Image (cartoon, rainbow, N blue to C red):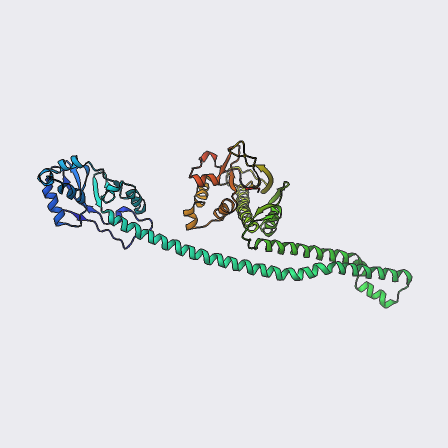
Length: 474
């Protein structure tokens, strides 16, 4: 007798599988006459079909629709109704779609829709165990599929809403920081502008006092006591140094506030030529508090022309890559210190080669090449940011590649995922991850766009990490 499993549409999730849907368990032997199956179909109008077995082995499936089609043909009742089902099965030869019960509903619906038009209404055979088969009505599969798509749409809508709120919050924060930076910059400008006059006035006063001493060698006792009290000789030497120190501090504060304004700047609709070296230096200045004295920053700047770009977004990319490099170097430094302490306490630890943490930034103009030999040579700007940290494990690199896909970015945005989108989508550039020891490089853009997998032998895990950004020159 037919049996319907207790599946439900109430608790569907994005990752729901076929096992969770209502499934019909009804098997008949090939030797069963067609009239018996027709009576079962008449008694159970919702039964989509029957699984055909021969001595306990699965041989196929016959649907309600297919049986009625052959019975309605001329002489169909005489040919098929009173004969065993083996006659109808050998005559129909319909291929059943067999899917495992662990297959997601969305994937199953897509496979069902790829069938030929005459088979789109046929039920699907769901395989539970090696010898256990059940039937799934394709209409129930479609209902579940569209319910899941509705859930997916709702989740995506909520994510977009949260992303819009977060983007608006970050834009408001950027405007707030820009306004605060502007308010700081005004008094700093006053200080910076007046320091030149203060230095000139103080130097004039000191020269005037020197002239008085020259023509009045004998000073009254009251003036002599006052000179000793204020330590005039030390004041005469230290006042220019104090003014110079104030000028230096005001200059650094002015540069920092200007860098903060540039970083919070909202880009225009169209890209504008920008000095990439100035963008990198501004980001390094903002990260100066995290760049401890142990981390060495090496700049190998080449001669770069102004590059048409969105300067604010590129600054965000540099910030993301440099922040990750700093985190890796700080963690490596702490691990090395702990290893040294453990060795000092007599515990056996593997030897660890200590090296000074270093971030190296190299910029140059390079040829991009062209598949067409007759086409003019295209050129681009290369920005390489490398560190000598512990590197990225193969598993983590695969996670990074997955985060660049549209599906993963919709679930959760990562700093490198945002950087990839800015470089490839907004600037038409390339994003590379170089592997050390002559193992070549991984084109992150190519691997994401083509779905290629990265060979684990090409992934570095013990010799630092280097990201390269290539922007085309227009």
